[in-house]
Length: 392
Image (cartoon, rainbow, N blue to C red; front, side):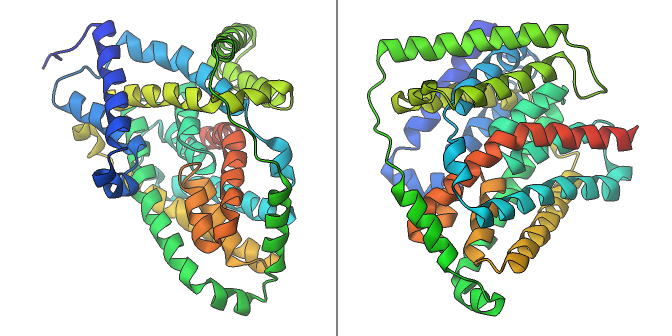
């Protein structure tokens, strides 16, 4: 069945309209409960997918490839340039070790799930596992970065986003329920709750960054920086030799761009966040996410239920390693909830879960999510590299 909207210009207008409408509707007070359960990110992905399944828009278009190649790197620049690496380093040994255990748990969980379910997985499952590792160590931007870099099919990329949503939000509900039992757990674990007070004190010492309206000078610097870095890294990536099945030309470009953006976050350019650099980056990212959803078809997604079990196995291994870390460190259960949700949930929900455990320490969840976002692309590509060897 031919799609009704095929022209790239009108297709771009449709996707941009969907993204804009979703975020406007999410601000309606009466619908706040609905969007608390299903965030705007989910609607931004599923509405284009439903549109494709209904024959309104196509599942293939030059527009989708252009957005993946050029918009993704530009958005990553704006998202990473404001990463507060120094603040992350001041979080303390306990938070960082538990977060590391959570990230390792996701990576090892992907390997375990791949080995267990291998007979029932498609040939490019190693790419899907890398994308899942990227999103459950970092966030949705990492999922798209890893999936696009590896050339993951839109069908499997859509399935991984669904697994991220269904399994991820179920796990979030369990983490919230654990908060009611943290006092009893901490007594059993012999946890020193003074650690949390120390982290809170260090965060309180940080001066709140003043926000300011975005000026034309700010906007032009952001756009210019994003475009120049994207073009430069794509050019350098194009001349570097491929390594294996993971480090292709675009992989090199993404890794170079991520590294350069993180280095720039240590310079005065990080103050662009005061004018909304990450906000502009996320606006582009959601448009990219809508284009990913448009390439999906619910009829194809239903053909791979084994990936839900894949996600459950990953979460189980992640939970075991994260719990082992707080047991060995005698750390409060707070760090388990904050680190786990920082991995699996990312920016949008990690502060919420952290605040449920300890209202004064919501910033811990946010900063751990920032750390996950910083390493998510690297970790996802590393997992994909390992699994590509196992799949060969």
